[in-house]
Length: 353
Image (tube, helix red, strand yellow):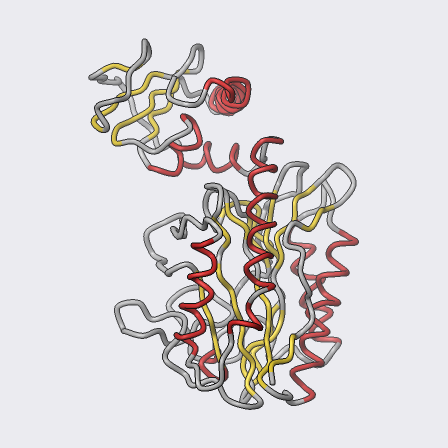
């Protein structure tokens, strides 16, 4: 098999879970073709396919690299019937194994280490792009793989976003609380060359991909003092996180957590700014793992039910005109009794003078 022999039990567990899910849907086999799911079922990315039958170990069909070899690697396969197995794999992948949880936890540690350095990276006269480059550099030096994997073909982004001031109110083509205009119309999201100035918030939302499994984290920084409404909104985002952390546990519908967040924001008189201002996002959290947008989704029409082993990013955010974006995002794993936070660094707005 392609995966390291030390992880034999890990992959045996994954295959068995996929087989059970396939059998429940009346499928005899699955043909895996995309990089993310090839990595999930085999332990590495390669050019080719993985054929996973319901009654035995997978078969690997490799084009490249030529150095891969093994008894279960073959050259050609012609199935009688093919169905799209994406939904099966996404459902199975939403429940992480202990090994996967460990990989995400490791990414979270390194992700937080990068964010702790951000205040020292800021220099007067910087643009949002300058600061983003410095943060990206620190991430790469700590081992970030750089790639930001996303499910579907309709969303693209480079490592994440650094959003300064009113650029946060520039709508993006994606379902984001704040988008940013970007540097070019071919990638209209993120930093746009805004000069970092007094009374401006800077929201850093860069993915942490250090192990092949990602964490998502957002922190807000201030240049000088912000308007009081911004501080109130940020404290409300922390209150939303605290309330959801107390309520979230296996068996809780994801939509209930979304509704809780909306209620808290409205009771604070901040509904107009919550999850966007000119354009609002339709969710407050999303699953994360090999891709940045896995299940569960914390949204009003979500059918997802929290289960032990799920990992999700919670991102209550606000856009305050004439200041910018405030709020937080953290990655949590669902345990038998609640949720565990993996992105451990200061949640409050950090001042920069």
